Length: 518
Image 1 (cartoon, rainbow, N blue to C red):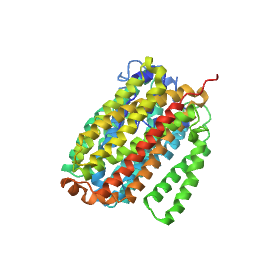
Image 2 (cartoon, rainbow, N blue to C red):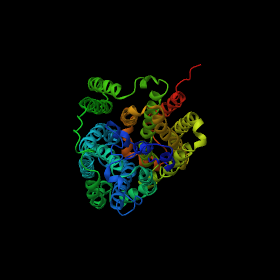
Image 3 (cartoon, rainbow, N blue to C red):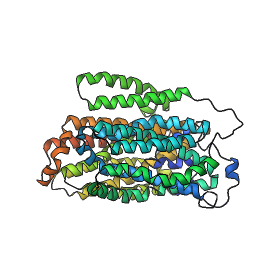
Image 4 (cartoon, rainbow, N blue to C red):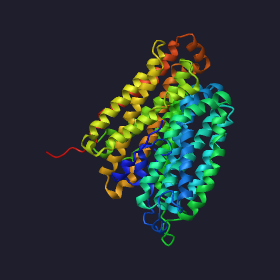
């Protein structure tokens, strides 16, 4: 699902990386640039001589190129959910369905930290080029997969590429664009998600039905060639190399790299244990926890996991909101295709309107007159998310019309627009300038880690209750007008716990402001 950070957020004083924090996919995780110094190149000579807007002569090629890259990656992000149920069925991999999503998030956790340090030390051209290459290779691996594990490996490679690209693009913005133009290019990045959120499911569904799901994956790498041909030469001119070539190259923060590797590896091992539900799976589960927990504690503000008031609760809320919603959303197309017999196109379109309502929620929270009510807005947003997630599995009852999902998801996305954008605003408000970078990275790690863990938990519950069999004959069951009881329980075991997690998020949202002394 997509989200849009309105231009008003930029006018409210957010730096470029944080303006992006409300946009999922490529934009949502962009603030991991903070592992170095966001907007490190403010005031560089390259930006001082620029005249005209983002489409002026000096920036036109760069702007068109990087916005086109975002557009294509946004399309891929929205298209995957439409094609995934068909891919999982054809590869006999429905029990591993959640793994195909969480593998992307797992590897991107490490890549974001690596990209931030790489870009700060050597410039964004290296991680951007490597990231696009890895992203394209991952698409090709998934699109040519003969088994589900091969497909998942491709998704993991995509995650590495996505994490590198996400951060590098925002470093490009910080270095190549003068400060007064950054809100405009960030708004263009956000707008790049509108068309894919509406057109992506329809296009991907049509391609899946007419040509096969593989073309959704293998066709995109060829489309990236043209925008890259425009962007890379401009990036080389304006944003390559260290910020100050005369200054010593900053040392690599090996501790953060180790923590990032630990959190990524630990999350991956935990996912494996969750998908292989046997007694000896407790061994990799314990090993994964031993890697992940210390790394997460080292990368998060103190008090995050006990919902301490103020900044720790802001970071926690971001993870709770994103994880519960994305984990549930990943199963919506599968449920509609296998249990109600919808085509992949119609299943994907059931989520399309959410792109607009998420944008509306982001716009509403940005109104200056509502600033005093931000905590109440986030509470209301989490209640809307919980209600949407709890309502979705009602379509497993044959008499419930399938359009209920589209209506529920529209409201849920409105709530997410309120919450995700508000966490970005509050993070900056509660962070001293010297700590804004570290805290921004923590916000994104919370987001990505919760996606991994809750997808793994949901996938394990789904597989344990026989959900893997849904891909085999769910469509036939749906045509008969009855959803199998086992399949109903499997889907309910995903959606209802995620709704409960979202309600916990509503409580966390009451703790976003530090208690004032009496």
